[in-house]
Length: 183
Ligand SMILES: [Zn+2]
Image (cartoon, rainbow, N blue to C red; front, side):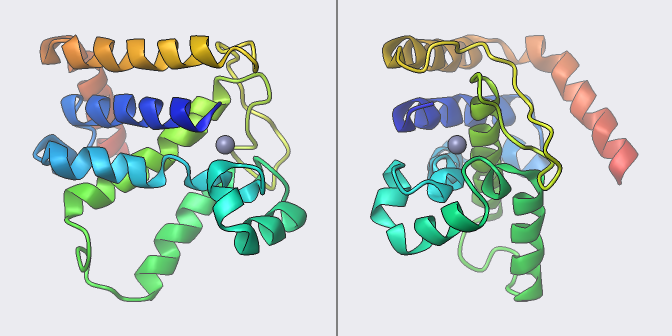
């Protein structure tokens, strides 16, 4: 997926996560914190490719990651997310030392949105890296038809934005069920 596609898809996921009340912080969060938050990390996983938008600007980090792990491996896995959370916890920063807590939750959603979007392409991702299983649901078939991809993402933004909250009640209860199991 292109960088533009990822950014638009992240906005769709940000709107969805607030409307579906995936977390309490997001449900009560400020749109001006959530949208910038999701955009902040929407392109971050592609730091593993020197030709990506972010990789071209940070070649000193993208080249080593590319040669050590490869593209769509470590940075596109749940391990990267858990490693990041543990790393920042070990630093013992106060929970909202720099960003408001709703932005922190949005940052996580932005990162996850990238993984989800890449799963919609034929190459998929190694979600459970170092396990080699590739996860993909190739809805976006053509890698060259960027226009179609952008239209799909914009359509998703409009659809989620216009969808009444009451229609998301099933999704809300699903996430509540998951939270009850986990905590
Ligand atoms: Zn990617």
